[in-house]
Amino acid sequence: MDIAHTWHSLLWPLLRLLGSLAVGLLVANCIEALNWTRFLARLAAPVIRLGHLKDVVGASFSMAFFSGLAANSLLAEAYAAGKLDDRELVLANLFNSLPTYFLHLPQMFFITVPFLGMRPSLVYVGLTLLAALLRTAAILIYGRLLLPPLDEGCVVCHLKDGDFSWKKALAKAWKRFTRRIRTMVLFTVPIYVGIHYLTVYGAFNAMEKWLSQHLSFLSFMTPQAVSIVMFQVVAEFTAGLAAAGAMLGAGDLSARQVVLALLIGNILSTPMRAFRHQFPYYAGIFSPKNAVRLIAHNQALRAASVALVALAYALLT
Image (cartoon, rainbow, N blue to C red; front, side, top):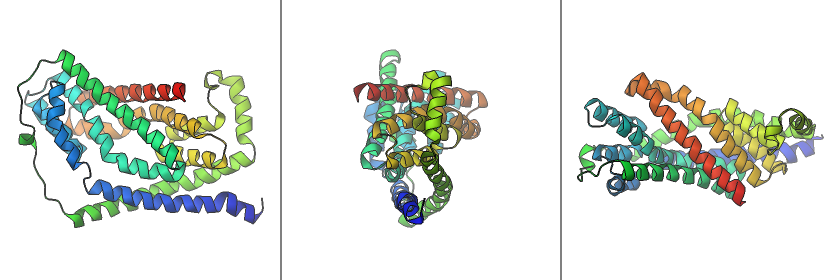
């Protein structure tokens, strides 16, 4: 390929992608650092009453919009004091998955848009949000049916208001941005370039023949979609997005195929990554036994909810 073709088909799209990615990531980190979820925490009290959950669970739910560490520490203290039993501890930890999702929602959205474009990003993020809402609804229904009604507690009594500083918030956002952008560029550039040349030299056509002969159970996925899943499993979410963006830009995959591949990669990649990264953190707050139990329940419910919305999306589109 000549230089002009390489510039128009590879270098310029890659530079434009990296620029959009940097802007989006900076905006996302600023939004997160400014505690945009603060108003959502006020919903805790009426919501926990629907599921017959204790006030300490509602307080932890509110804290999880700002700090997962503070939320889990509150649960650990309540469990050690006998205010929560084993079942209530698991339910409380599962219940916190929604605020945890909202805490990182801006970064997920503003990272996804540069790779996939607005419409596929809205679909993917919307489906993962739907999965998080379904998890919360399932916990509330379970509590409503199987837990005894409780007297109205005092959620705010468990909360401690911290001082907010714009200067500290923006400094925190910039620190997160500089750390995250280096990692994302490190993954994005080689994967984007690699996918481009694999497509040019027919590697995916060869892979398609091999899959049809050896892995018939993956026949519903194209080789390009399988590669997106593989990048998510062996690397991280950004790697899968880089591969998806390159294929979507080249016209090798439709938006629907990309969204389904990312959802499948989400299901397969997150559990082991969660154990690898969350276990040391959880074991430091809860006991190792409880850490394993909480992570296992959390990931099982998360995988089931994402699989459900992925199946619905596949059948309805």
